[in-house]
Image (cartoon, rainbow over all chains, first blue to last red; front, top):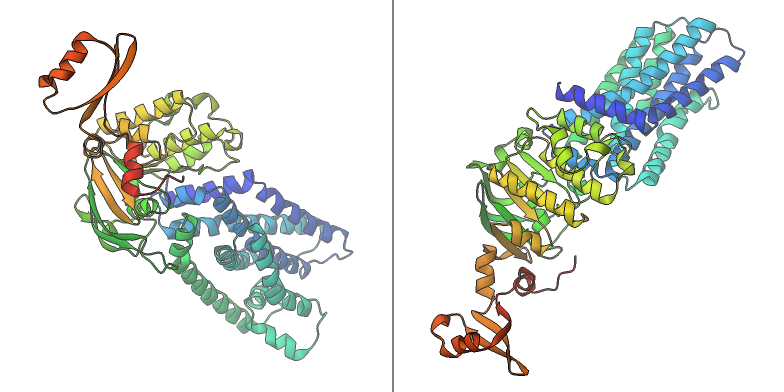
Length: 241
Length: 284
């Protein structure tokens, strides 16, 4: 079997065995509960908003947790002496981390198609989710590099959410209406993520979607470069310096 | 197999070199022991050889080629047995091994090895349910998984009962008999004595001594023999030089006319040599 496929399959098995899939499904169930109990028939806008929340939070958290488990169980050491490249290892982690996001998207979309009204192309939304999840998986991995333990990771993620996610949510849900603030948050990659996901509803200008797409792709490339560049230092630390 | 020339290594945050210009070779088909107290650089040396650490000065040749020129395919030929457990605790032993097995192009008969180390019946148990000894044995299986040419073993019998330690030591010997090369790091000098063809003692980042266990014992021991014998009602002791012992009249008279209680050559144990050579008491 191709090594990359082995790595992805291994990650997915571990996501299941360490109950991380269950946690992701539980969060999806909460989103479906919100959709079910809100007295809104057409959920074309609400579903992408919930998917945005799900992907940005869960992708960052899940990949971080799997990384922390590997550190705590020292399995990272034995992975480092296997015949795989760091690209295979890191991409295997990232790709497998996108699967729960896709699952969550499919559950919410499926529910909405069956019981509500949703006017979004699933595959456009899928593309957006894959890119946003990829980007946030990179953030999760980088945060884990610099976190000592699980508590440190959670603290780092909390800080990240306050700085990057909260302002975007406050504007999106019209809690903050200041025009300057609304424009300022365009520098945040989370705003691009939101634009890309919301763009699937057809209510966002084409040029805004393109800029968001380019911004996220460039940011992802930069983060991936940083991830690979710092991997040797991370490996050095985890091998028991 | 390995030729290490003028190896120097410093950790990024350190002010001093951890490895200070060491040179040695590991020959194909030998069991080479790398010994020394904590913090002298033996783990660092091992990590460099298994490519976990880069940025060293000097030269390391593996099969005549610069170690740096090898990519991840290097690990197809190398097996690493860690001292601490390195398996996913919520997966069974079989699942753990199957995962790693699929990463290699060539593998051994895992079931056969699991049977040899006494884990076959427990292969479907989660690692979280394993005892320390079982995890140590599983680490050994993991190291052997890819049918390696070189084995790096860190305390392979630590935490094992005598029966299982014997099994693992026999497997290491078999590996060597089949042409494998082993770099062994351990504090159990009995294991070193039994397994190693040559040993290197490290102290303060340098190699303080390198030779065969036998030669070291001769070098650091006295060429003398102690004899304890009964003469009438009294127990007496005497020491004789080993050179021309067969011509020593007094010695011959004692063994001919008295009941011998004990007789020992005064060679040092590897434990004694460890302390003498490294200059410190063992602390790990």
